[in-house]
Length: 91
Figure 1 (cartoon, one colour):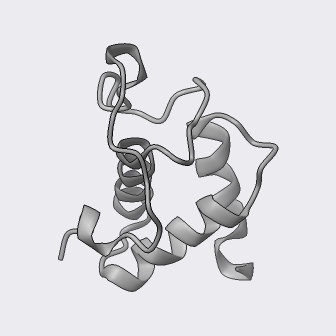
Figure 2 (cartoon, one colour):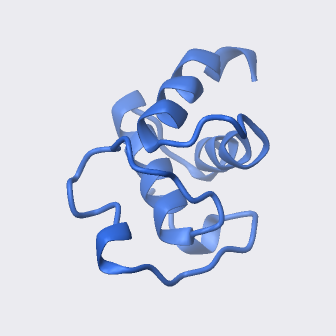
């Protein structure tokens, strides 16, 4: 069951500029990650779920909570993804 916009727990902005589109490279990048932009958050959730072999709303929402609540000092998609993977079992 794919994780969709309707499964998100928090409210987000759904507008982005051309260079701010996370789908351009197909990989989490080192560009600044905007936790309030829905497209970026949803993309990263789906990417992490795919690489970890996860499915279901509960897993996606766990990732969303981790993105939202921690860690504020990590500013790139790649660093946030790495932090989630390293802290998955303890969260």
